[in-house]
Length: 245
Image (cartoon, rainbow, N blue to C red):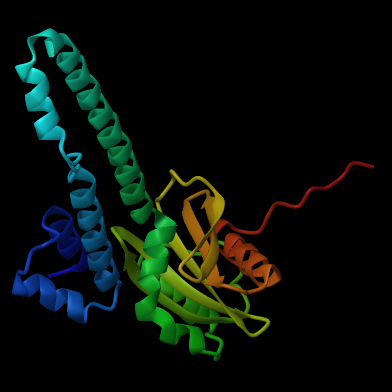
């Protein structure tokens, strides 16, 4: 079973105890255990949102009102208001749950969830050769257009959520900075994020999306340098502007 099939099954059947699913969860190094945990939390939240409690004594009050002919109209109006209030509450709960599920499937959330199985890569200190760095991108049918960034210590083809990515680590001022390039993802809204001990940013490039991230407390200078290095390598050097005399 691969990661994509596992995540589709868990999304449809979060409570499944299929031994094959559980075996993949326990052995996968691509963050499927974290995905499973998020699916359980989401299912718990959905169940809690739908369990709308009935106020204590409501049944007795309704029965008493129904027995009083003069108050039938008032009872009907109260029922309508209660139903409307319950519908509004459920609607707000549903919107909140949909937003949380969307957030859990966002690229920053998937990138952070991918990292527990990749922490050893952050400890590497030996720079790779340019040829080895280039080879890491050929698996995604890519050819780098610019010079290789300095200090790259790790390059690997990975799958983050449903996205095929090139996962890199660059040591900049002795700080490990992760860069995940997602070729073909063109709907990115650039921005910064902080979650679960990581800080990062999404960057829209001409051929895909670059996610640069580091553990909380990393210097902005190091992250800026890594972003510039990979932008130049992927898109090519920025054109030089020649002024007229």
